[in-house]
Image (cartoon, rainbow over all chains, first blue to last red):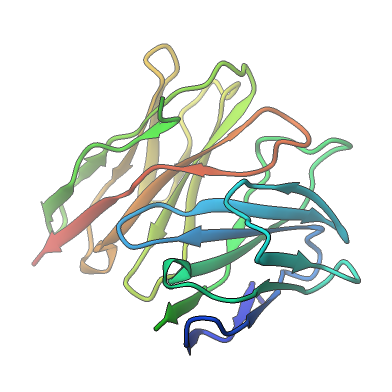
Length: 119
Length: 116
């Protein structure tokens, strides 16, 4: 049983550097999501893909953030010119669309997350 | 207004006893889904249980059950026969409406500590 995987699990970087995270979803899942979680808070939605199409982006996703899912399989999240406020856990999740438009019963399965610390 | 409210800052329960974790939600949609996730200290979000707004019966999954009171907009998680491994953060989340609005909105979470 292969779940959602994320790489790296931990990343320490200096302010101003660029970082890239990878997420590999469950193989038959066509929807992929990125969330950010800061200390003491619940995850907050960043963006999601259906296959290779990026269908929704949160206002939290500033111009320094970019996400891709080029072949509808794995996804990358890049943060350019990192700031200390970017320090957080970045969670990836995947789900399988149910029905033509999808439905509220779709369960999102999460990966282990990437902990980012910006010094 | 917050869409998901979890006000209990921390809960303690004795091993083998039952515990209820509270969650209230706010939505104007008729079709929505409610989820509970567990997050141990390792950080991974583990799916526990799902309740649909049109489901007539409360959801159950092993030791987990959801006390769904639609009129009061509450979806409390009940864990029976608590185990030491249940110590973790617990998050309530909601997915509103069908189709394109696919994201989950989470509450701030509740810390559960199980005492031996």
